[in-house]
Length: 237
Image (cartoon, rainbow, N blue to C red; front, side, top):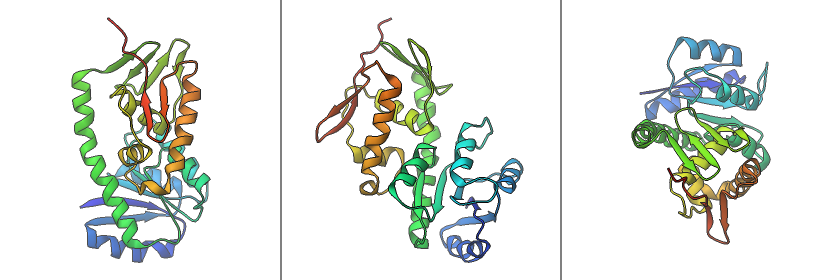
């Protein structure tokens, strides 16, 4: 059974949601404040967070950002944002800050359960994939660019490139298979496991921001009506 931590100031939500998710072997526990969530995370093990966008102390977007930027053991825990702020801009911001999925209120509990199962399933296989990559090489080296997969750092000739978690994941996915064309749906499904048609525009925004951070390197190539690929040649030893 997977343990989930809900961070939502609507106390009436926790009871019925706990009962419903139990049908899917998902054990839900709830807190109403980010500070209480941090205390629980430090004391217990959880498999994923359900994070409301509107919270006391700080909003869910800021909490997600701080969690991903921390050095705590739970920094890479899957996060599903559950909030009334459902327009596209807020969804893109949530994903860029490191959320793994985004479900606006009001929502169907069955859809929430399905999305949670998706991100938990993806997380279960992620350590195996990361281990396999580490055995091959801890660094991916290209002309003018180096990706350290152990430190999760990206460097170019001018120094360290500051990327969000989502930007790093996108770059790493493309760089592991240089020249391979990934469609927008491929990228969304590989990185987030969501319904791709809801966030197709989000990929264009992410690629645009990543491309600007990597300038003047022409690392990302756009193929009209096809998608994107990594275009830098590998560095010769």
